[in-house]
Length: 255
Image (tube, rainbow, N blue to C red; front, side):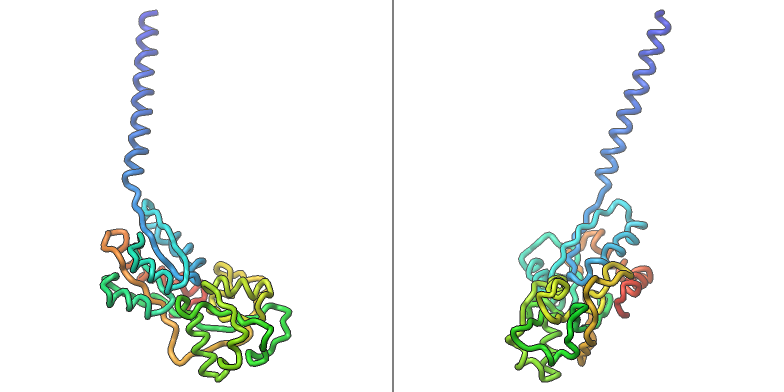
């Protein structure tokens, strides 16, 4: 009996040790977790999920938080001291402003895009110039959404701007523009070509391209390194990798 009792005690000690080790492993794992906050243009919502998946193959302990919005709004957040490690803008101007004000230490042009005009599937509109009030044209806010500035630039170049100002309905980002047209609250809208897709291959429902809206200069997406911590630099360098470039290509970005 005494021998059996000693065996039970020994077993309990071993089990307790295993539990302690397991708990310690959990603590160690938690301590190893790293955090990264990336502010990204709304047009990057789908592709950044794919980028994160690829990135975590090499950095499994890094937890990434994405903050999406218009590039101008994201710039203002960085200027105000928001908790941001890397900003991924849909233009060059906002990141350049941060660089000039010493809010980012390094910049990188990571991809390109194209501006297009869209309409809902059953719309009878054939050309942009056919839209007149009370019909609506959805565009991003000019001061905070690069696609909005590009749209106005395009309309002015085509000498359509003055006759269409009464039709404008402004949106906080390209996703809202897309939503206005998708729900037929606007006759047409200006977005990026990548916004035609939901994920890699699936087209957005009830949306078709009306026409390309070419500009004189390419639409360049520029990133800025906000903090100098290791995780920030690792993500920034990942954007330069062939794997990241391939993912952008698969999601219909250019370059």
